[in-house]
Length: 105
Image (tube, rainbow, N blue to C red; front, side, top):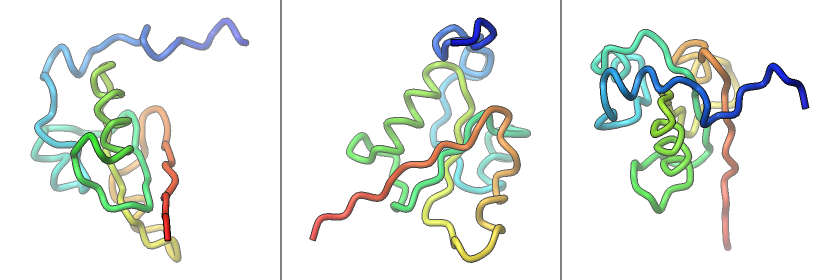
């Protein structure tokens, strides 16, 4: 392990401490603007529909990251055939996270 890697729980909780918890995790640039965000720290991309409820995995992951002080955006069900949906929230400050779609017949 490299010594220059900061564990996730040791990052400064700048956003959360200054502005509190977001009433919703944004899924569009318009929603980011409504929150006053210029960017997301982390963008979660999921093949599932996004519902901000604890029965949805990406909502749990997003809210967990938010609780650590990160601004989290969600890109749900992007059109994989072009790049436009993937660029809708801009470039994240830290990383894109990808969740898997689970399907049971």
